[in-house]
Length: 532
Length: 92
Image (cartoon, rainbow over all chains, first blue to last red; front, side, top):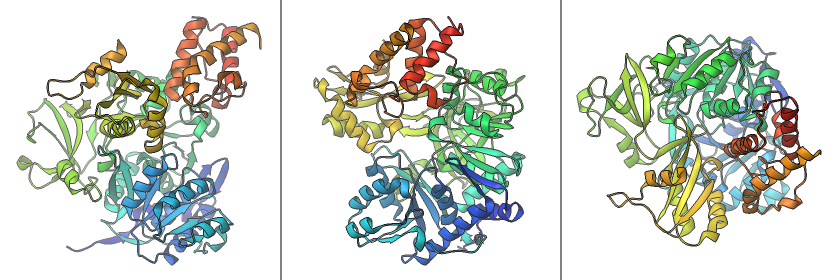
């Protein structure tokens, strides 16, 4: 098959904005502001440094950094070198980061001063395979070089100087632009490689849909390891706008941050709005600067959508939907004060319409399309649908399927139950044991696996705590044991292997585990137990 | 701190005591600058639960709109928010 090479769209957007608005602000992070000119120079320097040290011709470069200048320059610098980026969130336990790094097979890590101690832990796990570590803002690596002499450390002074404006690399449309991980039921995260073709389709569609321009100020709240961050960064920079990285303390209550910075585009998970609403921070007219309030990541309830519309009276409020496997988002629904309450089902805002040039179908358990108006599992096909999981062919075969009745397309099975009414998709719930916590997709089996290892019993299970309207507030664990004093051991084991949002809030030790007729642990009965 | 504020402070510490124990934090050793969220004693949902309990116990509604998170996520700041809510008459 002929390989098509094109200018990287991800870089073209930034570079064009750099040429048009060199003195405009491109990024505000940790209280510092960077123009397109200064930011572009750093990106270019990182790209050149990667290429000069790319002995193994890697396709992917790891980025161990979270919402700092290095993180953002690292993303663009990696892409400018023609590689794909692998965001490794420093908030994850080091064991998880290590697994992701191994799966990515990357021989280069970009990181910064803030993450030096984490880097040391990671290096002690890697063993003797030589890696290149680019420490963007670190001057002295004597200690690291002594302890880990087989790795190649590049300090701030050793970073090469690239051209003033980054070069736009030519990349195959199938080359990986970024690799993100979703929760995996076996305890190992599943890698989803997203190609340049996948993400270019998304960005082109969205930049046509919204009238973003160089005067916009975008929020950037999502971790870079969460694909919604791709939307924030690239739609912002291809519009010549400025990206405002939301500091940690404002993540759940960004009211002051939005007001002070007069943000115009706010992209958030519904749980943040729910939290703000509970704290009485979503008062009518509080956000006059917002032009767009965009939701994604979780079911959005109608009362909350209405409240956000009232809080931002000049904004367009939209609900976006899409799994990582279909690239950021693939459907949208625009909130309308007059019509939306009646168009919604069960108090949940519809998923709306699938983006143009994509197809959707709803299937039953036998992979057959359901009759019009019936509910079933949503399947998606089109240019944003990725090719499957990294090195997990059996999972790829299960989730990326052909549907006989519908021709030769490959369909991604979302696991989401939906129905179509008046040409609009409605979310009904999940098909399996997957839940969303603060926008993150979580396989309960992954938590179960860790609980079983932590407790040494097969009878250990995690149960989601429902807050309202299908949003999950957290996890509790049930363990069949009389050793109730083990809670702190189990919690510290969980902290070692699971990210914060997957750690149970409470562990119940019970001597009578309810079972279903199939002999499986009955999650529903356990949920009733908590309510009772 | 006035009497009301001391009562609120005691209630908050009491409510968080179990979580503190899990993290080996000794309740009587914490000071007024103790941060609930940064210390890991509560996450965002736990914080909402704390607000609900406090509102119920002291029969008030707390309005956080004009507060910065750096004010209400530490012990004295939180107590102060409640005290000001009571003074401004946000009574249920």
